[in-house]
Length: 193
Image (spheres, one colour):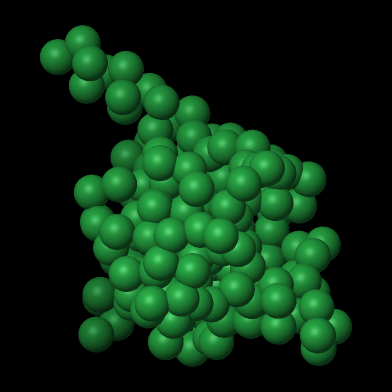
C-alpha cells in the first residue's frame, strides 16, 4: 500500500510534461464530475445550460448568454398571464421563460421563449385565431412582435406540457460565445467533408 502511495506522490510531484498533462486532465475530470453532480442536485438535469443563439429574447437574454435550466420535473410553469396577476417576474417580465422542443422533436434546436398563457383544446389560440388542436402553452420571444404560434418557422400549435424541457432560472452574460463558436466551427467542418 505504501508503495502505491509513493508512486502516486511521485506522479503528482513529477516535472514530466506527460505527467503535467495527465494531472491537468485529471483536474478537469474532477471539476466536470463535481459540476455534473451539483447540476443534478440543483437543476435536476446533467446538462442544465443552454447558450442563447438568437435575439428573440432581447433585452432579457442576448446572443451568447448562458442560461441555466431547471428540469421540468422539478419546476412548474407560471405563464405571463398568471404572473401579471400574482406579481411573479423572471428575466424582466411576468411569468417563466421555458425551453421547449418544437412539436416535441428532438431533431431541432430547442426554443427558449416566455410562456404567455395556457389554452385548452378547442379554445382559440388567440383572439379571433384558430382553434387549438390540443392543450398547451402559447409562447413568445420577448423581442418578437408575434406569438410563436403565428410564426410558421416556430410552432404553429400550442406547446404541449411534455414538450417543455425546463424553466430558465439564471443567466450568465456572454459565457455562451465559446460554445456557439465551437458549434459554428463543427458546422463548417461538417460542410467541408
